[in-house]
Length: 110
Length: 112
Image (cartoon, rainbow over all chains, first blue to last red; front, side, top):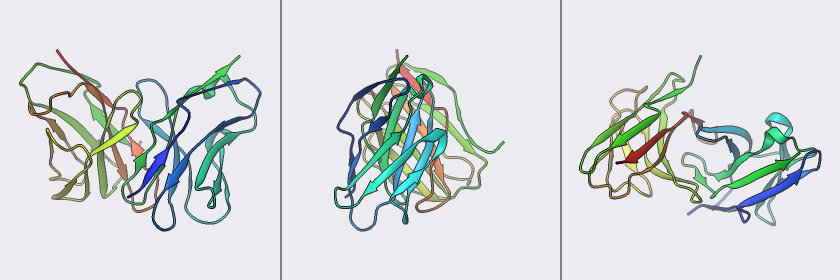
């Protein structure tokens, strides 16, 4: 079975500061890992994914994620947060079926 | 534009009624999925289909039914057997293993 944990329900960060949204996973074999963002009353939008290769993955809107196999983590990062980054972020794992974490509400304070 | 269209955006159901949520995609994706989203619980898989005329139950299939008669369409019926149907429902499609999922804008179902 595959699973994902997002240990923080809420993350607050000041605009211009770096942000990190944490994700750990459990899966047999090599993982397919994803980050999605959701704005209120909307569907999910794809940000980035890790399949194989470099441990640092770059995605949309300046986001990146660091894959760490030994810690089974895939944390989402951005060097400088914007107020417009405020949204609900989901980590997911899977190949043909995605299993999602419970989500982390990111609030960027002006 | 290619994408996934869910309709309606808002849906109200009376007790004991069946209702059907529409999901259409023009991305030519083989796989389609239905998720339910409740506050604080993330997305839970209801049903999925990897190919036309075939579908499998997800983690919370009880009280729901689906069909996949066409590649483009994957409607979800919420039956009267679903005791707590009030939720946000999301449809998604994928091209293949390890590819990103594309999501519709969701249908918010409320029991009145």
